[in-house]
Length: 371
Image 1 (cartoon, rainbow, N blue to C red):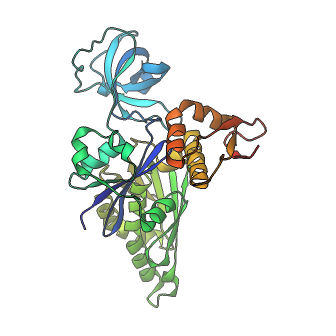
Image 2: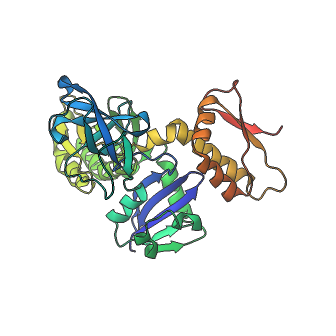
Image 3: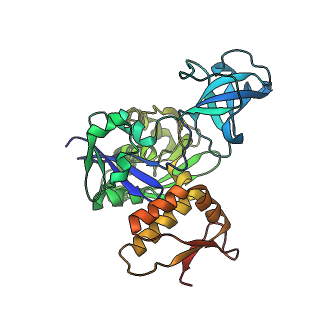
């Protein structure tokens, strides 16, 4: 079966899955009210230069800033100089956006004179996946989404009642879980930290394999690693990643080098396998570009969008007045920032969401309000 791009609409969010006969090939979230900025073109203004960091902070639109390395700068910059920059890495993990000024030109009618400003938006996650899979039809379940797509993509659109079937829904929902079921009865636990992503593999049926223990453990890890490394891509895990394979003696782990390299070669971001550490941990460096899935699901916008989706599913088709929402402070702020998500919830459910701040709730908590 030819690959298909499935775009399932929810309040304030489009879940995008690329599937073929083998299952889930790629996955991304597109939040129109919360663009990650990747690819955005800005008229910036040079701020402080930090020689120790080898770059300059650039003031961007809306009071934000990004970091421009000297290697990606057009030349020496003095504080206050205007500069045309593009965001090449979204803000994440408490760090601002990474910028580049190479190979850029001003859009027609624009000038470097003036305050910092956003000059052009970069491609959305759906645009990026449509480019990566140029022959795939784009299946949508909400006619309003077609109007948000570039004109060049509209001939590829197909409308279905539900963009995701049950199998795709289950596969995408599993990406939110820290535990991953792998071939051969193996399992992995994924633990993101501020410094790195730690992955622990646990043995399964290899323990009952009648071959020599190390032979069985090597075969089990070899067969499970491609699926695990595909999960890294689906979840967009990035930065430093370390994997503790299951049960295999440290001296035998380098024999998995070819398996890891082959699996990583299928990832369009081209992660680098750095080898095994003295502790036997496989070390991988995957470029940071867009925020990882766990960050998108766990931040205030992500929790707010999950809330609206849950609320919409509960009240759709319900006669009469739907219950409102009582929300914590962070969810209230996110709702105020994203009126489009609230409008989507009303359109999808047939009820207007009504919410109020409840200071007694924790910042990311909510409950139905039947009052």
